[in-house]
Image (cartoon, rainbow, N blue to C red; front, side, top):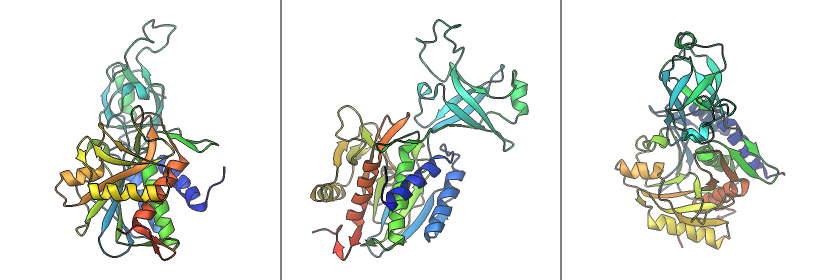
Length: 354
């Protein structure tokens, strides 16, 4: 399937960004990638002490921050076991059952990267009668290193110690029907949408009706990504993060989701109402939902004391925090809603209050 040049660019950025390992707390590769990408587009960016990336896209008046996060789920070594294998604990809301049989990369203290796989302890069904019925936890699963290691000392000699990061293979796939399947669509898909938005501005295809910043955060998966580093003149923040898809939800992979409330409370009603109005008037595929097991960088900023209006949108993502699925149309609807909210197209104001 062929797409317009900006969707093609978004998908290219997505695949490359997903290929940069960046579990929360270990995001330098993704940060560097984004700095380089902004530079290619002609935008200067700065990096905060926490590794967040801030870029101004231009515009004047009523400054708004668009935020997405670069950090993902992952694991960290808790124990090098006597058999040379690794016991890990999760980074963010990553469940042990989701990681079983997945290939991983282990970043050793000496800078080397080793391959491995996460398995149930004693996983062979021909050996272990209970393999199928055993609940998967971090206490009964382990990382099997693809090296000749049989003892704790063997593994330590590789430079693998407690505190080393374990990154799970994302397995990125774009299907012929436009479905995106991968780990870490939450929220590298959101970041890729913001890069496509920036490219449209760079190419003079759309014109901002207000000052716009992009803030790509780290540590969102553990709750404090958006709590510091925002520009002092900001008056509003809109998170571009995954939309929830599942039973009882209106959202789907092909829609842009607009969140009215998450587990920390409601989003600013004037922002939410404006987003809904624009999506409805322009016949976007969209949904309005309430998320009961969710937070965002926009909520983190409010919780940190920033005096901002705040909102949340994003493409629908199915099976969040597992092997996730979205769709190109959901991303395109999200990008279009951003344009309607923040831009002037061909001299027509699309995002100003009527």
